[in-house]
Length: 219
Image (cartoon, rainbow, N blue to C red; front, side, top):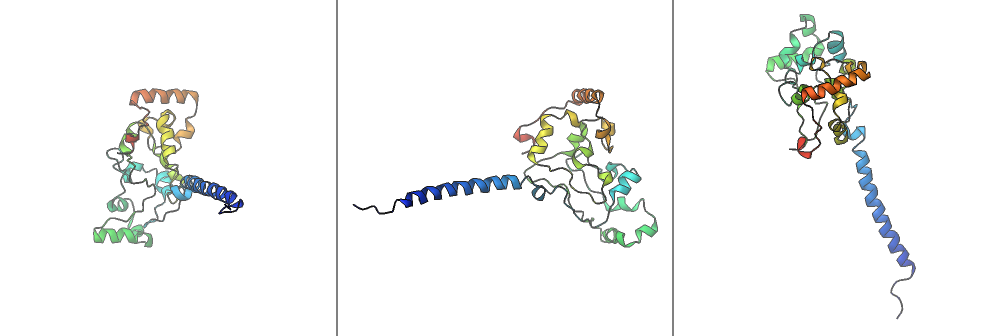
């Protein structure tokens, strides 16, 4: 009985199966690589705000404490955004009547908060508590970078699962005294062996543990 298919059809079938496997694996690998890029994580993305707030002026030149605007960072999971009233207390009437302050004036007259745009965004299935990190001695710049050098704040870290776990596995290098939580440039200025020993002492003093279970962040 003659064969229904020519011999070369076996080669085509094997090649097709191999191509399907390569394509499927390639798509999965490509997606895994994509989610680690800055395009997917939002790292260094430029996000325009309704008010051109320059952190270089406020956090560096004027040395305004981060907690003045982000007032709930030590008490709640969210660091909070500044209420409109916080913007008017420090500026004279000339500034308040200027064009950049138009959204502030509109917010005051309408009693609606300024529509600040989120910069550091985590997926909805990730739970992050600012207060516990601050209480355990993790400084603002550890996650948010040198905001005192940013005219427009951007996401400084990838905020990926791997990035978070690297700190959770070994939190000691990222610890500092609670009195220095909002200090900028503190990490770079404290890199000696003596500082490493101090961080180890802080880990015991603050009761910092290495938490890597799924329920730590996914609840």
